[in-house]
Structures are given as structure tokens and as C-alpha cells.
Amino acid sequence: MKRMFEFACANGHKTERLCVYEAQSFRCECGETANRILSAPAFRLEGWSGSFPSAHGKFEKSHLDKLKSERKANS
Image (tube, rainbow, N blue to C red; front, side):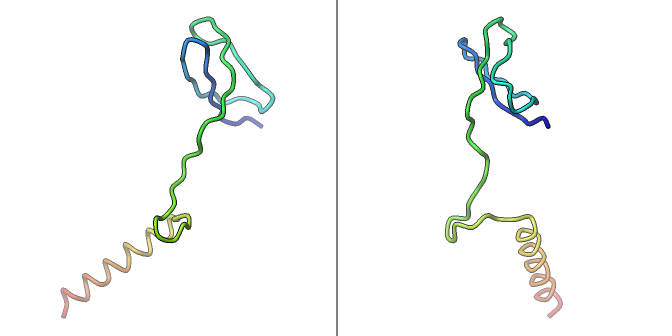
């Protein structure tokens, strides 16, 4: 199974590659050996609760806001 990993060479080039887990290095475009590095994960926490926001939560909030504004406009 292939996964996305980030690699960096001695000249400062950073590249993401889809490769097998066992791959630790590959030849960079500049000719140097690029080694696999640990990259930071991309996620966001809510500031007040510390929980992970989900797509459903965002949809539910926008849906409730829309219903509230429609009810206000109709009354």
C-alpha cells in the first residue's frame, strides 16, 4: 500500500511523494539524496471545547442559521 510522505534533500528541496512505507530516501531532482522527514499533521481544534470540528457539525450550524433567518423573515 502506498502512502504520501515528505522528503527533503541537503540543498533544501522539499518534495511529497506517494511511495511504500519502507522507502526512506530517493534521488532528488538536483541529484542529492532526499531523505524522508517527519511532517506536521494538518488538523484544527475548536478553541473553546478542544474537540475536532466535523463536516456534519458545520452543515448543521449553517442549516440552523438558515432556518432561523427564514423564520425571522416570515414573521
